[in-house]
Image (tube, rainbow, N blue to C red; front, top):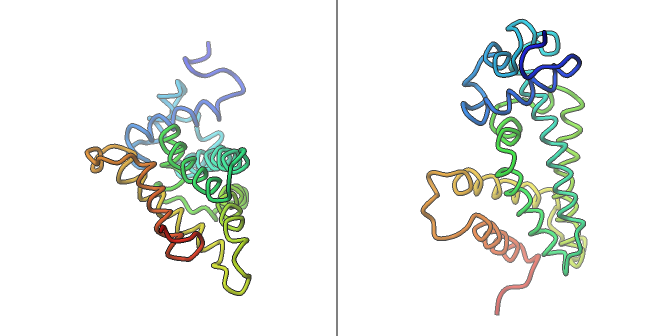
Amino acid sequence: MARKGYHHGNLREALVKATIKLIEEKGPTGFTMAEAAKQAGVSAAAPYRHFKGREELIAEIARQGFAIFGDLMQYAQQKNHTSALSAFEAVGRAYLAFARKFPGYYIAMFESGINLNRDPEIASVANSAMNGLVSAAEALCQHIPADKRPPANMIANHIWAMSHGVVELFARGEPGTNTPYSPEDLLESGIGIYLRGLGVIPQDR
């Protein structure tokens, strides 16, 4: 008889789903492969049919997370926006929404210490996901002469860092739960200040 939570042919995905829950509850280093197996309802030896160890299992979760993340970023950018700035801000909001809706994936992707270059497939899907932010930055800078235009990749990485900081401090509980501003307001105001400083958008009058 198959163990609870496991059906023939889907052991790999059952382990991924079980591990996502463990990551959300205990963090990326707070559980063992045996616990992942127990959560999935399989024997302690079963996970090793698909994964060499916990790090490889977390890497697979990160790969899947970047694929979902990339789709969300692309969708946010391609919606019917009134301006390149609104598209850029939508991408930032999509980042916050992803972190809230998929905390297990987010932690595996950005907080587990997994080397994204450990596997070409992971590196490819991670780079593809971040290309949405780079594309939004490029569209935002099109009105600036090429010789004075800030590098789109630099802008993308700065906004990525800002978004990550807002998530860590204000979108996932303490220490920022008592702030009078929403994470979205904090991020959008920060983006506005940053882009005005670069001259990408005009100063307020």
